Length: 66
Image 1: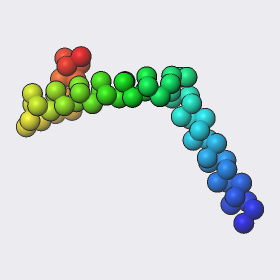
Image 2: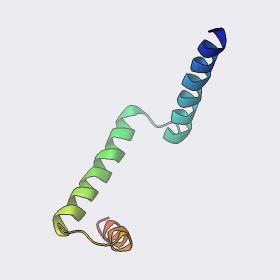
Image 3: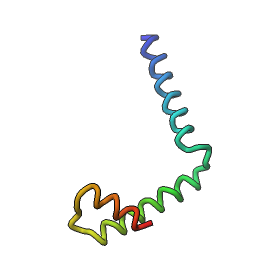
């Protein structure tokens, strides 16, 4: 049981350090602004191309929407 608890702590700290690495030290407000921009970009692409297409077309549309 003790090993299980240590494993959980190790997993928790791994996720904390991974999140800190991914955020590059940005604060909460900056992360929300970035995600909001990406969400609006996806909505613009979905509205412009409601029937979809191939993955390569989707990537091109995402670049064009910037």
